[in-house]
Length: 312
Image 1 (cartoon, one colour):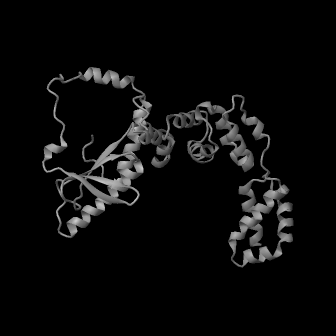
Image 2 (cartoon, one colour; image 1 turned 135 degrees about the vertical axis):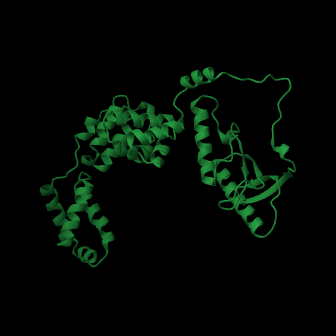
C-alpha cells in the first residue's frame, strides 16, 4: 500500500511493473498476474493544480493487467473530471473496469473512511523489529531493480528509459553489465541489447560478456546479416566473436566506388528522379550495392558515397 504519491496512469503502471520485478527477483512469488498470483487495486482522486488536500477517492478493484490498470485509471480520471466540471459530486465507491468496453461500473458504495482501513487482529502480537535487524537484513538482500536503474544512469551514462528497459529482467541487466565491464561502449551495448539482441531471443545468462563486447565494438565492420547471425549464436557454449569478425564489411572507398558507379550508370532514370527530389530512392541504390557485394558492404559508407555521387 502506497501513499498518494503517484500522479498519472503511466506512473502507476511503471511503479507496479517495478514492484512486480522486485517481488520476482527476491523470490517471493512468480507474481504472474494472468495466473492470479498478483492482483492490485487502484485508488483514484483528482484535484485542480495547486489545490491542497485530497478529494473523494474511488477504488478500482482486482486488476489483473498493468495495461488494464493504466487504462482504468485514465478512464476514472476522465470520469471524475467530467463529474466535477458538470457540478456532480464524486461518490466514494468501489468500481469495476471493463477493459473491453472501457466502461466503469459501481460494485458497492463506501460511505465511511473506515471502510478503506484494515483493523489489527487482537490475537496477533505486533512485530517490531529493531533498526539494527532491519539494516542487517537489508544488507543481505540483492540490489533492488529501482536502485540498479539509477546506478546504470550514474555509472554508465544511460538515459533513464534505456536503464529501465535493460532492467526489465535481472538476467539482461547482468549481461549488460558484463559487456560494459568488458570494455564495450555502454550506450552502444545498451542499444544492441535492447534491439538486435532482444530480437535474437537468446538466453542472456548463456552469453559471454567478453565475446559479446568484442562483437559490439566491431559491429560497424561486420555485415548486418553476419552481425545478426552472430547475435543468434552468442548463447552457444563455444561462441567466438573472431569467427564473425573475419567477415569484415567492405568499407574501402576504392573498392566500393566502382560498384556504386556501375549501379548508377545502369539506373539513369532513378538517378534523375532522385536528383529531382525523390530522395526515398536512396534506399533502392543502397539495396543494389548490398546485393552486388553479397551483403558485405558497410551500409554507413555506402550511404555516404551514394549521397556524394548523387550530388555530383
